Structure formats: C-alpha cells, structure tokens
Amino acid sequence: MIGALSLQELQQRFGGELVNGSVTFDAVCTDTRKLDAGALFVALKGENFDAHEFLGDVDGKVLGVVTERALSGSRMPQWVVADTNVAFGHIGRLCREQFNGPVIGITGSCGKTTVKEMLAAIFGQRHQVCVTQGNLNNHFGVPTTLLSLQPEHEVLVVEMGASGPNEIGYLCSIAKPEITAVNNVMPAHVEGFGSVDGIATAKGQIYTSLAPGGVAVINADDNYADYWRGGMPEGVRNLEVGFGHQCAVHPDNIELDGQGRAAFDLVIEGVSHRVQLQVLGEHNVHNALVAAGCAYAADIPVKEIAEGLSVLSGVGGRMQSFTASSGATVIDDSYNANPGSVSAAIELLAQRAGKKILVLGDMAELGPEADKAHREMGALARERGLDQLFTLGTLSAAAGTAFAAGRPHILRNFSERESLIKALAPELDGNTTVLVKGSRSARMELVVQALTNGRAPL
Image 1 (spheres, rainbow, N blue to C red):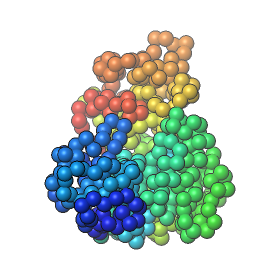
Image 2: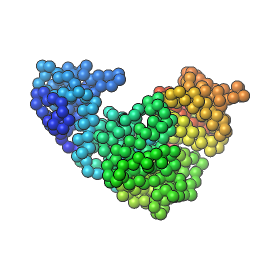
Image 3: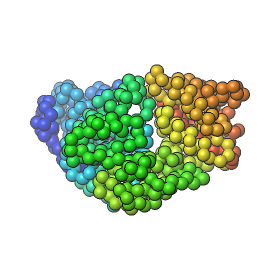
C-alpha cells in the first residue's frame, strides 16, 4: 500500500460499524491460506466461495477484519459492513486517493491487456509503473491493483474488464482514471450485455466517468466512435487515434516481416518516429496506436513512445511464437477469443508461407449469435486460404463444418483434446504454421503445451 489507513477512516467515510475499536494497517489480505499478522483481512464473497465461513481460522492471526457479521467472542478490531466486496473497493479507493501521478484506464473487447503491457513498456523506460497484473481487471482485481501502489510508483495503468452493464462505471469510481481508452467493441460477453450496443454503452462508461480536464483516447476506426464523442462530459479533451491521417495519432508506411511483425512510422501531431513491433500481427499496430495516444496524453515524447513500443516482446498466450520439435511454428494465441480476435488471427495466419493450420476452441459467451459467429469464422478461414481447421468443442464444430463445406474429407472436428492433438501431430513439419485460439473455458493452452513440450517462445 502507498500509505497506512485505519478502520476509523473507513467507517467515517463509508459507514458501517466498528467493533472492538479501530486499527491502523498498511497491508490487506483476502486468502485465509496466506494470512499476514500485520495485515487487515477482508472476508470476500464470490460465486463459489465465502471467506466468512473461515473467519474462525483468522481470529488472532491478523490485525483486524472486514466482515458482514461480527465475529463473536473475538477481541480483534472489526469493520462490519453490508457488503465486504464493496468495502474492498472502498479501501482501494482510499489508496488511489493517496496517489498523485497520472492514472490511465483501459478497457475494450479484445487487446486491452496488450495495450496495458505496451503502456508499461513505454512508461517503464523512465518511470516506476504500477500496472494491473495478469487479468486482475474486475471488481476484485482493480482494488487489488490499487492496494499494490507503493510510494515509489509514478504512473498507474489499470485494465478494466466487464461482463455486464455498469461494471466499468463502478471500477472507474474506485480507480478514478484521468486518461481513458476503449480499445474496441466487438461481440464478446454478449450474454451479459444483451447486445453489441449494450457492450458499447457499458465500455463507454470509462469516458463518461472522466472529470473535467481528463483525456479520452478514442479509437476513430471503431463503429461506436461517434456515439462516444456525442456523450463526452464537458471539459474532457478528445484525442483520436486510428489509421486515418486525420487522426492525431496514426501510422504510416506499415510493413510486415516474414513472421508477421509490423514496422511503421508512428505519427503524433506531425512528429514521426519509426516503430518495430516485436509482437505478431498487423492488428497490433492498432493496439500500439491506442497505447501511444494514452502515453502522449500523459506528456511522454513521441520518440520515447516509439522506443517503448519497440521493446515489448509479447504477452503470454497472445500471439507468442514457438518452434515445435517437429520444426513447425506454433503461434500461441490461446488466452481468449471472440470473433474480432479470431478474425485477426486468421489474417495473420493467412499471410504466412507454407502450410497453414488453425486450431480453434469454442468462443464462449456469444449468446444467441454463437452458432452464426462460429460459422462465419469457418467461412473466413476458408476464404483466406487456410489449409486446415481443427476444432475442439460443440460450438466450434460449426466453424469446422463451414470450413469443410463440400469437402467432407477435410473435416476435423473433435470433442476431446487428446484426440485432436493425436490427429494434429502428423500434420506438423518445418513447412507448417499452426495457430491455436479459443476462449479461456476451452483451455487451448493445453494444446500449445502438448505441441511445444514446454519450449520458450521465440
């Protein structure tokens, strides 16, 4: 934590009841298996857990607790609240209020983690950066990031995810970002939002939550750019990024090498510097533009932005390249999937030389459009000239069927991971590139592990 807090401060600010007085703390823990005698314990609740069931194991082993029901017979200081998850956010909010550096908030349907890591690389050249770790981007993860702030940190980069309405607004009320961006809007988690329009509205809360003086970095190439511009709060400055030269931040002279890595001139308000991305795929040029816009809004020079973008080597499970023992190139893009990111993966694979194989697991949470979306991905893979499509799961079978339409001999749909891997192995040689993609629930990283035998990325 950036500085100590007390239960009394929290109770006076947010209500609730103090039992056994107050205590000052500078650390918080939420896992009964990792108790810290110098920390405050918060009894969180989730869909499949409730830490209140284990409060007896906590008594006397921490400084105090945050709970929804007082622990009888205990002498520990307790802050009794209506909702411990909300209280956890309150603690994170007070940590954020102790921080004086620039705060950047990132959301979007896909690519937001890559944008976050690009920003960490840019700022990390000269600054101490506090950045969301892994995918800790929800109502538990954002407060966790804020609690990780330390006195030496100079910049805070917060990734924000959502699976339903109003979640982004809530996260912004805690993190209070001053520079924000929606990377893109695509069909992802549609079940929770009701429609793609619902996704755009929910993600747009990262803009409507800005205070006067904030900067909204807008993806001018997104279909919802006009919608966000029209709802921008008074006193917020728009900074537009995109492929059009009318955008304040845009690319020029894009070139792809044989691996699919893009080099381009990064142009920001007339100042240009060459960038050589180490991450694969032309779609990462757009991710780089969003990161560049956020960094520029925080007064980072264009040359420094370009240098930072050029050093990021990759993010686990996102377009990382390996060489299998067979000599085949394996591209691991298994972290997650929606139609937009699968389309980008197909485009990257289509540009490779030699035999091209897509291994696709189910895309989850697409609602009523799931079957149609999977069929469209199969048709796109066929249209772009991929040689084979191996699918894993019930939903992705629709993609395989569309890909193999009229060519039943090439149908490669599987319901078991081991069967897919066994059938795929003989297809791999030094002239083959195989790209593995799927939603988290499909566990496609296990396919990558089987193909690469734990080898390090290139």
